[in-house]
Length: 343
Image (tube, rainbow, N blue to C red):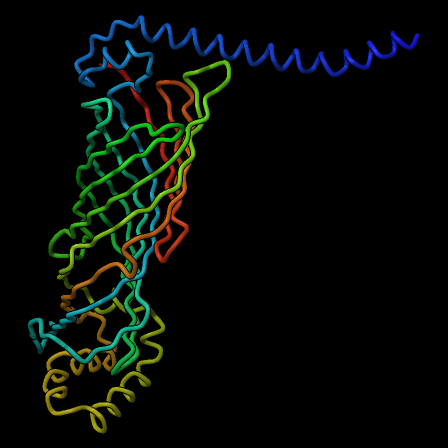
């Protein structure tokens, strides 16, 4: 009886271990069979170059061509320099004039864009792609001195560009370096703004135990955004200033007069007579039809920010991705669907 009892106890420990060992062996067999099937693939596509050699080594490759649809929302602080103002009314036509004594508060830009991204793996480690986007943008500029004035401009946005991604495995992790350049054209600007983006991501893929073509990838990294400096455009005053500005028109006029009469230097007054003065008069007259001309240099408050992301590959045709910028001044969120195919 004692021997039977001991045998029962031992079997309770051995059976789960045997089951786990069996499952591990089974998974290993499935993955080895999948690798062997890759080695037998006759790869006759032009792209990526050297695809046949990669398959002969037992490595899988994504389908070379794809179309990704991204939704991106991004918000970041701005630093404004080299401010220029001009104004156009029935009585005035003042060209852009530089103002070197203006002080700004916190400024930001935000954009929500849907981007279509066709791409091609030209080499096993190099992907090239195009970017074609449409969306909306919001820019908030806060003037603190010599008057307190807030401008909020919402407008449609188009974006076009191209880029490249290079990547490869390093032991159990992979590294991807991505660079792209886009020309973003808000409808109220005279010219498109060039934006250069660079990202570095380090991640790991968790492969499905019984479906080796299915995996979940996670990563962390950093992204750099460099804005084209010069921005020139014009906008009606009614579209540039929120309702609260018109409600406090008397306060704005009084503060401007106090600065002009008691603090401003003669050189500052000469500049103000061509720029801030006509602007304040238009606010005082509630003349929303006045057209404000503006020119400025801008850059991101912080060039780098941290990012985290995840990607789920259902099969070799469908991939779903999300990524968020959560560390630093720049905040962003991305959702995407990628359809890949053979030509």
